[in-house]
Image 1 (cartoon, rainbow, N blue to C red):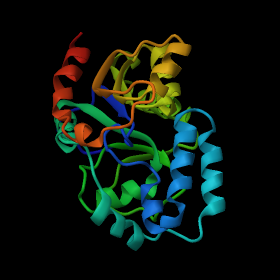
Image 2 (image 1 turned 135 degrees about the vertical axis):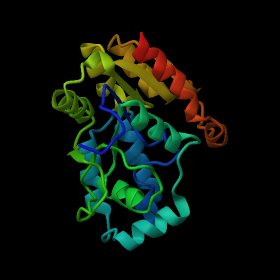
Image 3 (image 1 turned 45 degrees about the vertical axis):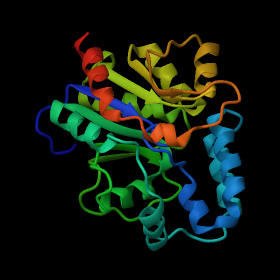
Image 4 (image 1 turned 60 degrees about the vertical axis):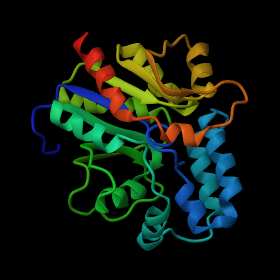
Length: 253
């Protein structure tokens, strides 16, 4: 699936937007077409709060989009707007060295990550599960496996597919997310025995898990309450290398 230093013995399946990165999945569209910014934010909050489906969100984007987002437009956005939380590249590299399959499992766009990896902004991960709304022709050096994610429930389905492909038991899977859009992924984890981590945990994730009787195994970074605005400056001070001992603890248990 991907070259590595040792066989995979565990899986770390994580969201990206506002979980490993301060950015949202539609920010590059707002950069290319600034007039869409407020509507894109409304769409994003709609499906992460489980008020609309991801499929409905993408249909709305198709309707309002005035033109394409070319690779040149995407690269221009990445040159100015790309950001990941502190220590995220090192966390991915640590996982590769320890035989932990790092799976980006996100409603972000496949095309965004294709350009991120091509530009060397992030170590290439073995598996990418992302939305195909924007996708460019495949280039060399990308993830060994790319899975389409059309609805938030596909996060669990795609993690299950990788579990089946690798033969790694669900008990050695860690799922990480931040919002209610990750709720179905956490639900899959709860049903199969995988471990869950809330990263920059939003009230929408806590509410989803509470409603469905799902325990969040660990909270990492900031935890947001009712009506509390995001504090990106504080988020950017969180070092994701501090997740390494948590992963070791979970996998050694």
